[in-house]
Amino acid sequence: MNNINLQQLAEYIYEFCGIDYLKNLPSLESKIANRLKELGLSLWEYCGYVKVEEKERDILIELITVNETYFFREENLLNELQTVIFPKFKERIKERPLRIWCAACSSGEEPYTLGMLINETSLFSQGSVEIIASDINKKVLRKAEKALYYKKSLSFRKMPEGMTEKYFEEEGEYYRVKDEVRKIVKFKHLNMFNKNVGSEIGKVDIILSRNVLIYFDIEAIKKVVKTFNDILNIPGYLFLGHAETITSINPGFETIYTPSIFYYKKGENQV
Image (cartoon, rainbow, N blue to C red; front, side):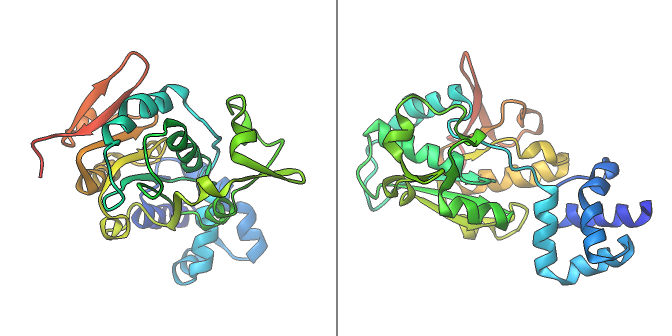
């Protein structure tokens, strides 16, 4: 493929959603090669085509994003949420619910896990918790909204004993998340790089954005983290992937360290 055109496509992807393939053009090339063959287009033609065809842009996003996830991922983080963070908000009433944003929620395992944890705590009354789950990939969002998962899939590889029977209904070879969990979660198609994220999501108390920033360069990270800071209430908590850190960019968060994980709190002196 023409490296100049590949560079142009990588630049377009970066400007659109912040995902950085500029330093990894061979990976981008491998992800789109079959699509170019399907369309019968050269890379030069495709660069123009994807900019004017919204449906093709959606397909491109499906090709370049990674959506591997599973229920009850990262036990230590979930335990911190359940035993330390959620109890801080137990006095919330229906008029001002606890609001949690799962950024880049993929096929829904993470927000549904949070819904199960919320139920397990018995801290909150019906209607006092909202989980907003967003992703840029429309295909995985459609799967998430269906809440239907193949029984033998890797989605269940860390499922605690008894939780499948408690929170899922059998439908042939699939399990479907029960309504008591589904009604807590609202899915939204969203580009985290969009300037309107704040108005789309609204103020929240907790953000989970795990293993997302690893695909961004430092400037894109700064932009996204500023958005996180802007929409978090005080106190507000940000959880990233275990390999991600934002301490060096001085984003206005206090780092909370525990024996097993670290996460971030929006500083009390902010407004």
